[in-house]
Length: 330
Image (cartoon, rainbow, N blue to C red):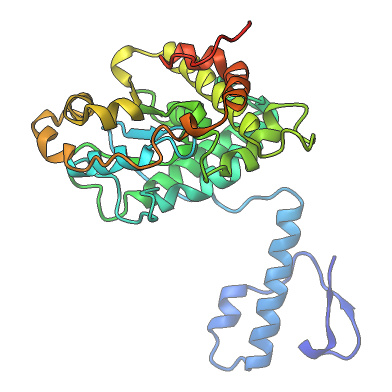
């Protein structure tokens, strides 16, 4: 039961029946009904619907948007790894990466999914190597539904083409299982940049947002948004993503090291274009590659700082082909 304020027609407060005896649509359609009475009817109907919703009665579910049969190409990685360069390459190769993009090439329509379900999921999994089937049902079902809606919005006005399509968002690396639940055959480009470079990046957004989900000592002032914290998260996320991807068919994944892309653009862009079936665009797309001045910035750090990073991320550095510069005792 709810109460109606006095300005809606009667002095004082009175109780409103949960099930009104009038027909809402009929009364609103009557030409003789006063404006005040119409507003009062609208208010009563809103209250009734709120009551029913509170008792567990749900509004009819919206019709699910149809999605392309062709699975997407998704680009992700630790923030600052070079995913923007890969997005530009794909767009130049004729892959439909969407039209509503931020300056970094991230698909804006996917933001609500990543902003809401990545932290909620990491709070439960504490890692990125998980199966959607192991998530709580409500979290999994809501996440997949939100992803579907976001992808449909991403494709609005662009779904008729037969060209390859997809999106780029670094945080895709945290939601691989959701994407696979919606698109079992999706193709993923895992972009990696040397974790020592990443430790000194100005882009530490993912560390700020997610470090607390991965490590118990996240409140320690010594690790909070520090190069060591960045390296630890880089190592954990990339190793776990590689493990998850390693259980999928090889033709559904491609690992691109940013250093290789900058050093040998024609060769690496050729791999990317072949992966998405657009090999004929290799030369055109290779013009999108520009090596940043920050590449290899870790080499300008003090030896003891570098040694500390290599202790923190040595396993991952070795796994992804980055030689250690110091003798690290395991």
